[in-house]
Image 1 (tube, rainbow, N blue to C red):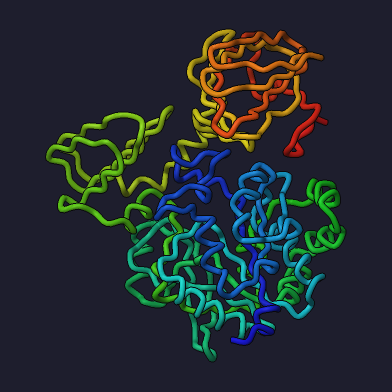
Image 2: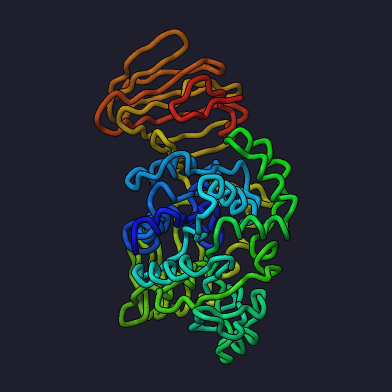
Length: 469
């Protein structure tokens, strides 16, 4: 392939999902795409590496949530993707708005561009075959939209299906889309040989994308025309209605073809069962990714790193242990994990939102203990990093340095605390922690007050653009 062909090829990476079906490992603040479920790199990093041979870094567009701004910046550093290629959504509005904004951006740069849209949380074992199929789709899509169909190898109930029609050139016509089926219908689909899993990966020219939006989602199309900057996006985003690209465009389009995406080693990792299927098992068909003593158990998967887990006489289970939550489920019931997350949200519980250890751009904090009127944290600050200059309206804090050396601002005073030294910060006092050293700074923080929520922070200065408004 000649380089001049590549220059008009773009990728749109959808990276805003929250991966709730992978709870309790996946949380709102640390979703599935940023975790290393397979090999030693996150699914997001694997996606960027996979497309690198075909799509130049300057043509890689990433659409994600504003929640993940700092994770994304860290992950893309080795790939040299420009900051101008990052679209941060103020809130999730499903996939149609994400793709519309990205297509408009690409078209404004290159009206002759061709675009492949893909999620960043899928597993694809065979990257060369993936590049081969994408290259074929981009080269031939012209005025068509091409969706990638995965030949099913089991009657999955967690995927949407595509019924394929007659062959037209390198592609197949799409007869219809099918919702996620029950098990009996899924078995019938697989047996017929005419149905494919909907991969959520598709290609078209940016012009074709926009023409389809103009035809089927005209209001969304008009709104995206108003976006020329990040500030425009914040204003316009409030007026945009949530919409799925599948329902809003694909199921209505008359320009849609399908390419069978065979030999990819693909999984959307849409459930713990799907993840379980791609990993090697021991002689008892177990996956023991934890400190486990297993007696007479078979076909079980155990994930954890917090404590010893003992199993006796278990069969066909998935066990996922984290510091603050434990999941035990039949393998064929893991599609329902999202329902657990929904219940946690309804009850106002925080286990769906964050792990006990919460990552921040400056480091992390771990909640060690909490109760009525108090909370104890371990705060870890990266070398040469600082927390924001801030104050709290409803809580006081007491800090004890347990490792490293801290430079502290307290009101108008600046001081240095060595290991085993401490300082008290009253309610309303402006303060800041900086790690001037080359190693990790560790501080025990004791909070006291009637309200201890993380939103009780007024930021006056911040190295990461998180000022309070």
